[in-house]
Figure (cartoon, helix red, strand yellow):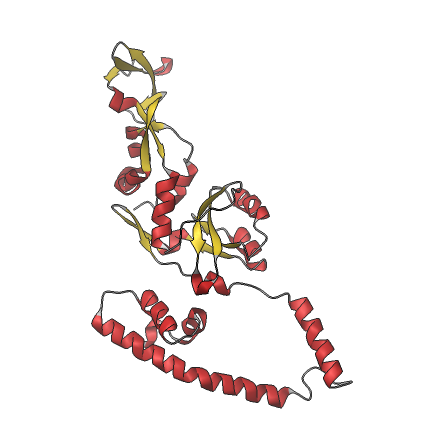
Length: 303
């Protein structure tokens, strides 16, 4: 079935009769219909021919009714049709409904956000108690998506950008700035009333350190504490011991998370593995990313 988000955003400024939307989306129309809203005082300029939907008839007023007239090149092939207001009333995408559906799916909080070109503000992500804004990219081309990212430079304010489909260059640019990107096509599924799915990214852990400054700082510390020392030459043993101690400390948390996942799956076998793992990370007081790297769905034979 056609995934609707990309098309919805592509035609976000279209005002067309309901039958036009139905012809455009085909079998996917029931899933996008909840996001369409009628315009109270605006009628469509065109109406697709019932005989040949690719031909657009021109809508004109005709007393209390409306008449849809074929273009000159099709006058001999197609007849005029008489329509009611309900037939020609323009419908358009209700961005608020779309925003609320995505916000509900990803458990985002409503909040006021800065208006940005080609970006639809969705809400605020409170992952790991780090409050950052989430936007959906409205640009339908790869170049347009890249241009839309020009204003997304501060990872403390913009935590994530949702893309209707994968945009490699835009996603790579955001990554260098410590901002997450989500491909909606990969993590959302359709339902009769909207969407279902789970966010695959822990955007609160996406901050990237300035590695240049970090390396310079380490050099300064080592030269102060260990004069003339090459990096790590006199600290490797202690660093390894510290790393091992930290790793040993996490083993108990991993085991606790594993027990929690098994119990949760036993009590509710229909809940998704991603959701259970998220709950397990909170239960064991460990980051979701660390648990994701340590525990996979394939580690559980009965899943």
